[in-house]
Length: 437
Ligand code: XLS
Ligand code: NI
Ligand code: NI
Image: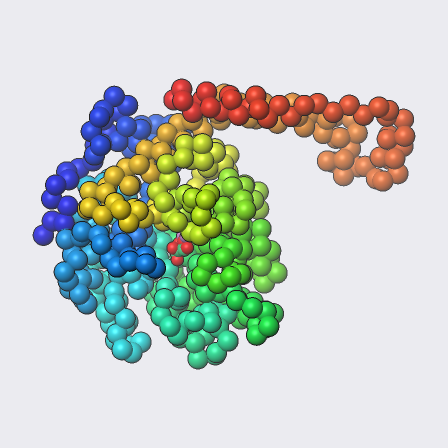
């Protein structure tokens, strides 16, 4: 059965095309700085936003028109698998991502839930074999079920913690079965509402214990995926522990987990934390922690995670510039953790949303490549920090300088001369590059 009958394979037609169901910038085989766009971007479709979510918001019911909308239970789960592979094939996206509960319904016991999962995992495996599509990452949903009201790895109740551990164990087995590239931990409810009833130290120690157990179990079963933590500052809890990249890295350092984890960074989570996406990527990259990206964008007028498809060229350019600067995204990818707006309820909108995101990223990649190739920003840095390549600056960076030697220098160095940072000029240059590629 086909769920997207009206849509054929999405082709690259180039800038002149006025076909909405075609790419104008994403040309998978086009080589940019020595790699194809497909290799640079490693796009993934998020199962939950595309096949599980059907338009509900806190004020309104499901309204999306979906070919599987009249089904329920395991029939629905199976239909979504078919829809997923048809969609990946037509869109030409190599990867997908899911939470355990996106793909199969929970049963009345953990045994039954795992059995449901096994049936769907088998089906996914068969489809992956015939289609060549791959799993970028899987994760455990430890936030929707009411049992997780006070968290999972940071639960206040050891029984809930044990349940979460069982779920992670199963998730790792599923990841191995499907040969996943990465395994993600997003701390859905790992946070708190009020410190008045929260033992923060115990919760964080317990979370680290869960991660250590996961590392040990992955090793035991020979699952060699990259582990990723996805920071987010708030929502659903008022304060999420993995607030941002810097906080998460210091957590991993404190608990001796840096060798096993990297970060999965999300654009809308960055802005909720008061950062740009490029800031988060830079923080991860300079600490050797850049793992993967959840591509989306927020709305600066709203205070929550709106998970919109990324259409802001300025942001995708700077994002891809950071990725190129870091030497690429490695085993990670660009996962569209994005959903169509409730008003975009027709099945074609799923394609149009992804095409918008993919074209905006491809365009950003081309602009970022130009910035890199022409050393536009590198030459600014060379010039701006040149005082650290000779004389007293070289003494500082080589570790030769002391407070006394610097005092001696400062006492005779008068006056100090600074130079303009020229950021307005740089931003105009950036605009010119973005619109020239
Ligand atoms: C929610 C998160 C979530 C993760 C996976 O805000 O972005 O979707 O990516 O659990
Ligand atoms: Ni995400
Ligand atoms: Ni999110």
